[in-house]
Image 1 (tube, helix red, strand yellow):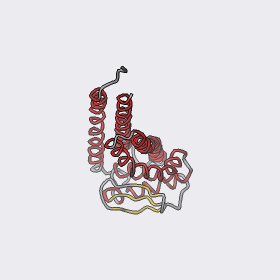
Image 2 (cartoon, one colour; image 1 turned 120 degrees about the horizontal axis):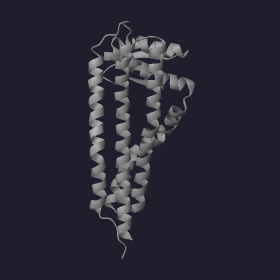
Image 3 (spheres, rainbow, N blue to C red; image 1 turned 120 degrees about the vertical axis):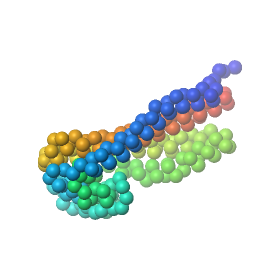
Image 4 (cartoon, rainbow, N blue to C red; image 1 turned 90 degrees about the horizontal axis):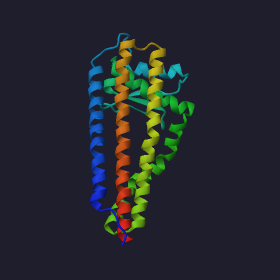
Length: 237
């Protein structure tokens, strides 16, 4: 009679790995909020606003056709390639703080990526439709596969969920590169003094850490599904 691991064994692996990932996620969110709040209180000496910083990053790369507009909310800053527009939140657009310059420059970095055809951002854009499909139907397939005990359906759910993990994996170099372009322009164009640049870097590093935590959480969840699948397969054998 074959020997197989018990469901408790698989759950133990998941929970053991989950604790440090949860701690990292909480830490990353706290760092983002803390650094953004801290450096949102520090006005830069050149009185460069977020909108101006975004413009300078674009100008430094010879890009003139990207719009820069305000949007509501806090930390809702983003670049939308569909209308080629950088949207900066209210605490960033007209603010001349160190945090505003860092965040705005980062979003402008994304616009630069699209303009120069940066490889990872092209891959991410290409897989968005597939990823959206996977995120919509993954849990349906997983739940039905579990309840009905249909292993092929559960396997399909794992594959679909895996697509979202791939998307998050591709997102990492995109985010790191956008920050590198932002910091490079901030230094090269002297938008911030040296001590102020340290504050901008802390804001961007904290934001990058949240993407790392999200990827690890997704990988961990994917691992759990794979372990469940393996455990059910062993029991059937």
